[in-house]
Amino acid sequence: MSVFTTVTASQLEVWLKLYDLGTLSELQGIAAGIENTNYFVTTTRGRYVLTLFEKLTTRELPFYLNLMAHLARAGVPCPAPMANRTGGFLGELNGKPASLVTRLEGKDLTQPTPDDCAKVGEVLARIHVAGQGYAARMDNPRGPAWWRAVMPDILPFLGGDDAALLREEVAWQDRQYAASLAQGAIHADLFRDNILFHHGNVAGVIDFYFACTGALLYDVAITVNDWCLQTDYQLDAARASALLAGYRAVRPFTAAEHASWPGLLRAGALRFWVSRLYDFHLPRKGELTHAKDPGHFQRLLRAHIAIGTRQIELPC
Image (cartoon, rainbow, N blue to C red):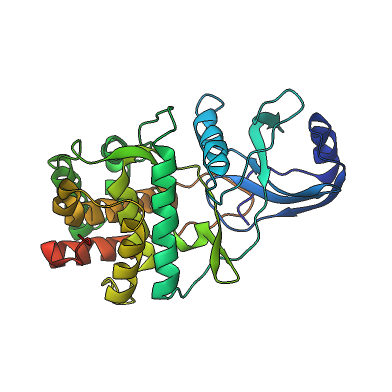
């Protein structure tokens, strides 16, 4: 279980007095996730998710919480932050910034179909369209500047081939020019475990704590890299085409995005290879944690480089 900061029922009962949400009925730790401490919280008035933020600060967190509130008001199926008695979304619990959001129905999918992927593409485009009305901005905290900053810390743990690949790909991505691509609020972590399905439809998009301002197509690439991947590290044509068509039905792709697509698939793979390497080799101390396999995204990156511009194309 990824619980870095323990919360007891008695501690939470005191903290909940800051909210008008009834009294505590149940507190349960959540096993998923490696960045924050999460608990399911049930009160006499509803079901919520409690998050204690282990890295994010009170200065950064309003971007994420206000984005979720903005998207929820726009009809995007995502958790809605709960305001405390003073109207704020953010508090402090056991020395950590903390928030409560609504708990959504549904479960994540491990074996999505093309129809599932089409629905994922559609909801991602809805996030991007609704996000155009969100005024706050935040640079990508795990973007190119971060890759460059942590690379010296990671390289000593890598063999010669992987070290060369990391250096070369970071340098290659630095030479790409993405400023001409449509920008806005992006989720930046829309893996299978961050979308809940209920009765065959998308019931919720969760975990917005890597959200930032960035290229919308980069968000699409991250999503395709997870939802449409085969065991041989090639993209499944049926799932990828369905996801991209579902997205295009809500927000058409631009000419610049068509040209940039292969490079952004590589950027999406690089981002998670670097972050998993960092979490695996330089972990934080915690009660029980699990760092995910960095090799998965190393293999995906190599596959994208090998196939080059012969990627599944964006629909016109």
